[in-house]
Length: 327
Image (cartoon, rainbow, N blue to C red; front, side, top):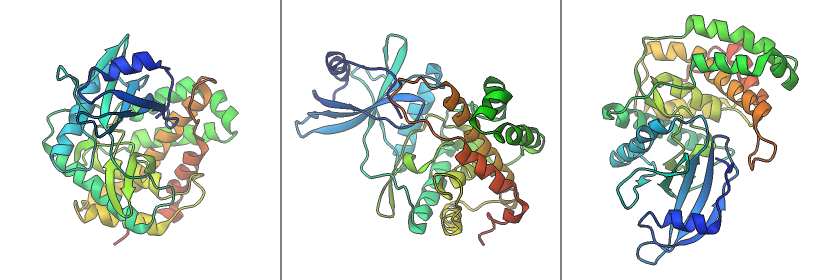
C-alpha cells in the first residue's frame, strides 16, 4: 500500500458518492507497500452510524483487465467463510470504477492489527487460515497466471542489470545470478495447484490476539503451486525484518497450523526448501527493482532487498535443509 496519486477532497467526495456507503467524512493516505495508492475512508454509512473502507487506486504491476479476478476472488472467499474483505460494488453493481485511465475499488474494512513480532499461536492461526483459503478457492471459476514467477524474476534481473544490483550491495548480483539458473532448472511442475495469495506477509494479515480477522491485499493472487504459497508465507513470517534471525518456533507453528487443515503430500514437503529459495528470490528481485526505480517524491517506504537475499542464503545452506521437517 502507498500513495502515488493525490486526490482532492471534492474529487474524493464525488467518487465515494458513486457507492451506496453514505457521505465521505475523511480520507487518509496509507504509506505502506509499493504497488497501489490506498486511502482509509470513513463515511457516514448508509444508516448514519458510520462506516470504514479501503479505497485502492491501481498504479502498476496490475493489469486492469485482471481486476475482476482479484475482486471476485474476495467475494468468493468471503462467501466460503474465509476472513477476507468483500468488494463494495458501486451503485451500478460494478466491481470497480475508472478515474481517467486508472481503476479504483472500494473494499470492506476489517478489524484487527498486523503483528510485527508474531507468537507461535498467531503463526499457527495464519497457517490454518492460509490452508482454509486454499481449500475454499478450489471451486473458484477464475484463473490467473503468476505474473511474478520465474520469467518475471529473469526480466527484473535484466531491468536492474548486474551494475544496478551491485550498487545495492557488492554481493547481490552474484547471488541472483547463481540462484536463477538453478531454480529454473529444478522448479517443480507436478505439485498440487490452485489459487494462492502469493504475498501473505504479516502486514497483509489482520489479527485480534491469536485470531485471524483478515487476509488482505490479494493483488498478487494467482493460480500456482499451493506449496509455493506456503514457502512465500514461511519466508515472510519466520525471520526478523532484516532477514538475519530465523525463528524455528514460528516455522513449526505455521506449518502445523497449515497441516491441521490441509496436510501436505510428501512431494510438497520435499519441494519446500527449493520453493522457499524461489520465494526469497522473488522478493529480492521486486524489492531491488523498486529500490532502483521508486520515484523520490512518492509517499512510500522502500524495502530493503538484502533482507530477502539473506533468506536465500539461509534456505540454500545445507545446514538448514530440515527447517520444513516439523513432524
